[in-house]
Length: 302
Image 1: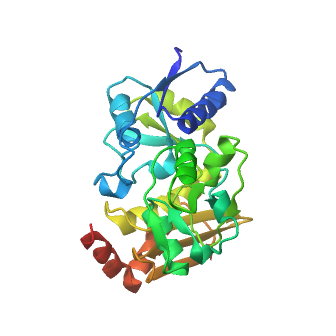
Image 2: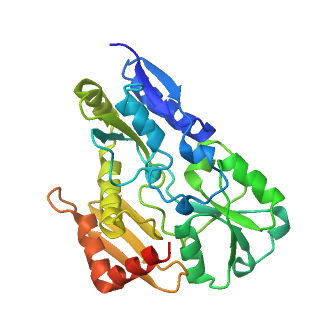
């Protein structure tokens, strides 16, 4: 078989993820070729993502390349992938999740400030809402770009700290101080590398299934089903995290208002079976307990 063409965004972190997929495939004696593609999300670093008015801003260009047969597979950070995939594409493999957490990075001058005193730089509606839930008087600035760009903006900007995914810091082997944030529930499927394939390419998809991590797949499918049932295509402050603990799954999730004042949370422990859609089940409970009205309020604010 010829080399498997691996499509990826052109950032350092995305290329690391593509190389990680390539390593898994090469360990099974498959030839690989990495094909970098510049995404729309990387081209526009001035606007916060929620203001761009589209989903899949980081994945759309890879989807097009996949459907046009310019690449055989596309590697994504799964939290960037919309729950509704383009026709004729599918997520075929999930690598084992590593670091799902959000962490706080401070600039040196803000080392001694309390959390409630920090001016934060983040464009994430979820991170803002969860922070406001705990610190309602917080001030924010928008920030975009890859990890290195954000850290540079942190040092140069008029704010004290930013929030990043721990996975990116660990994958880039960055030697920086960070603080864990138990108050945050991660974005659905944060910390997971996913591989998308063309639905018609059964030979390549069968190969990809060899590198799939089943336990990660179970967890992120619950999270993404929860997200899909709540969202209806809307970007909203939603956190969702499932983990397998012995023979049970623990699922923590919350939907928050944009100002953090109204949060509807769920924390469940249950035994998994393949026939029940747990993500949808828990999302419906949230919707029935005020989530429907809250989602309408969030949508009307755009």
